[in-house]
Image (cartoon, rainbow, N blue to C red; front, side, top):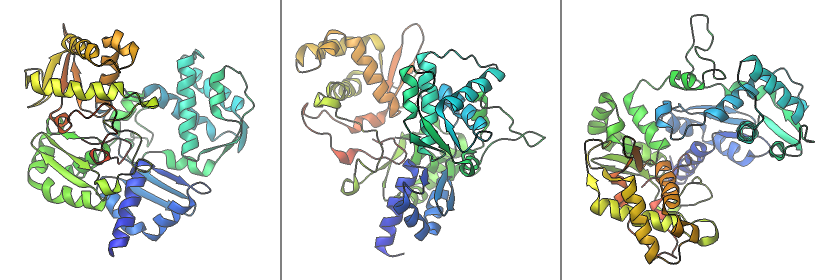
Length: 403
């Protein structure tokens, strides 16, 4: 394959791991590119456990779903409403109002004995599921937007088009079936059981490479025995080949591995939404700066590899020590946002969210919460408070970035 074609394929597979649905009328240029390089794109995606569907006006990447325990925060409420919506779409006309659709979804929820409260969190979860369907091209907003449901109107003037032919592509390829050929778990009634039941690739190399494509960093302590063996004997060769197919670099250390984007192709528009370190809206950057300072504190003064640590080399400190340290830093850094300087516990919560999103932090709970920082976090050092973060530290395959 010519070098230009290799670069084109690498760019395509990176895009497809971040945007797993391409639909006609919106993504025509990308769909044409996938058609031109379908064989190479399919091979690269299969190496990370993904299947590819290519049709005239649709491209769909089927991504294996990881066990629920490895999904920080979880999206069960959104998932419930998402699948309830999918269940009722088949029986609706190709054009329906938002009120008609929501009424049918709530009726399906009641039939499945799922409480319908119409509370704001529930409305947001319902709208999130609808938005996911719009992003996948299953729903099109002909008039108005589905977000209007959150504004409190019982029947907002929103007209939707339902693309029934695309419903089949929503079904995951790895759903466990019972003896009668039906789903073993109902995603509406038991979303956690349904996610837990999804089958994963049999090949441990494909599983590990899939983790590399999905996560900011893959920690050795999270792998099963067979996966650890493959990590030790084959990652350097086979993992590097997968990284090359994505146009990325493999960073391999004792505590784990990650795929890193080279600086020359680091484009925030095509590499996912998450960045660490990141600049906050408005240019303040308090959370980013405080996070970097806390990383230096934990790696320098934290307890290393304690009994409760997730793995060897993790840096730990009591949550109270973290808050106390942030309070000390807030006195010195007068440019930080006032609310964070006055309430360091609130700043600690924001930092925890940021680090957990990148799987660089895990918190163990007992009589006192302990923060455990991944050794991978030591990759960063403190940068000037008002400078942009170096894009070369970021990578994105499916919306997450790697250290």
